[in-house]
Amino acid sequence: MQHPIKLLLITSAIANSFHQKKNIHFRNQKPKIMHNLIVLAVAALIPLIVGSAWYSPMLFSKAWMDATGVTAEKAKNSNMIVSMVILYVCSFFIATAVMFMVIHQFGFQSMLADARGKAAIGDPNSDMGKAIAAIWHGWGHGFRTYRHGALHGAITSVFFVLPLIASIAVFEQRGAKYIFITWGFWLINLVLMGAVICHWIQFDAMGGM
Image (cartoon, rainbow, N blue to C red):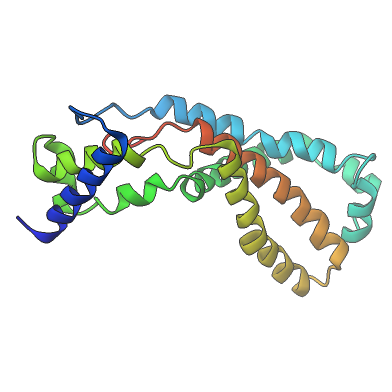
């Protein structure tokens, strides 16, 4: 027996002792693709909803126009339908990326991407297959909460989105007002998207998503 399999078996024994479960069965569920696509599609609506309030006259519409130089006349002449469609498509891509950021279980599955891991997933009676099932039973659903997803959404906005916006704004000679209005918009979006996606996406290390 090879060392990685031994390690997995030891870890599975720990999982069993913690949870005091017997007869752990290998779960090879079919991917919940349709369910997850719906979750991502709903999450992609969040920037449209937030944007309608964030960039409204009651909040930051005037400040944003002052920061960007966009006039009310120019804003009225824009094709809002096309803009909304583009925002929605981009938001769907962002939601997909957020899914991998907020769900730690994708990291566990990525470790099984080699030939041995795939063989174990395909053979529930193998030593590694049993160990994977035991580990997943013990810890496979950890950190799948609204709060955890919101936390990672906020972290992503601070350490990725804010530097990205700021670095572009510097070269476009835009001020701090523009940076913080735009970043605030995405901070709220990523917090909400992360919360929804982390809680509702269905994922199984054995069957994927």
